[in-house]
View 1: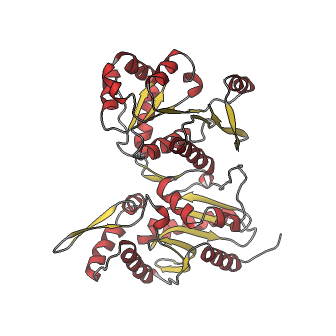
View 2: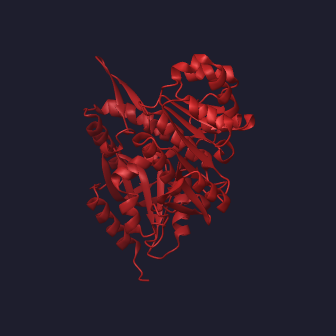
View 3: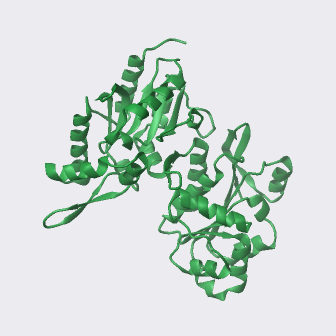
Length: 425
């Protein structure tokens, strides 16, 4: 394996990022970073800002923790003028490709320590991706430790808007969310659809750092954990599972099944599916169905940690009926309560023809029997998807064949030497 210096890797990466759609910009220090931010906010919002107005925006942006700043990035700022009120947007979460993409390198900060950051990707003027490089084949852990030192001593102000860190030595590349007190075990390889690691920096840049994909990861696949006040970025297998279900729900009438091994983040995956589908205008309800009361409370608590007040757990069948008839789009309930609701309450006939997505937790226990038959037979415009952490044995695969269940070709991923399967039925 040939040895390349950090400088050579950095220059090659900068050229590649420009080739795939980034504007190269020279930023030497914090003052120039702020000047660029002002011009990009103006361009993004199609507005001219007086210096005093930008100072107010900057004061708003620079205060708070990493978590607070992640919230501000996704929110708007109310700018009050003499004759009007303008809402300044910082990041386009819906049409993520319409953000403005720049790249810079060797931005310097001088405080207690003098620091130079290798490569910085800016979106709408915000430094959102920080890439730390080591010589080709060098220690990836050293790049991680260097970022940890930056977090302790150097990162402040606008650099606390970084959402994702990338570390690479050219032959191996990993990513992770921006949180204080990071652990190296929470750094991840990106993978392709066949679960092959995208190790090489050039391949990673082409796949993960492509402007639309990177912006989509920030818009949809970073979760702000409200309980721990930290950022969580989905792993590749979670991303592909969510994308596959969303595509199927929006573009077909087929159902599906996802298997994640225990401890692989099944709840987070199912939450993202539920959240994304509940934001679709043509979907009326997303109902997450568990099969025990304690799981009802536990899942509600976990979902609300990912997005505060995103769901209200249904305490009884009467509450569930009320929610089904309300404007609530995301509901968590047990299969027993949902079964009682469809069997006993004529008042929910009004939702019978609405577009309903049912997401079954531990579906290996709930996808058979009279309750399942009763629930799925009630709704006329229904799709349902199952999640399970129970290993798929040969016995289950034979049962799947008997039930005319077909494995999606190519959507098989090895996870901790286990399989992640998406099944059509």
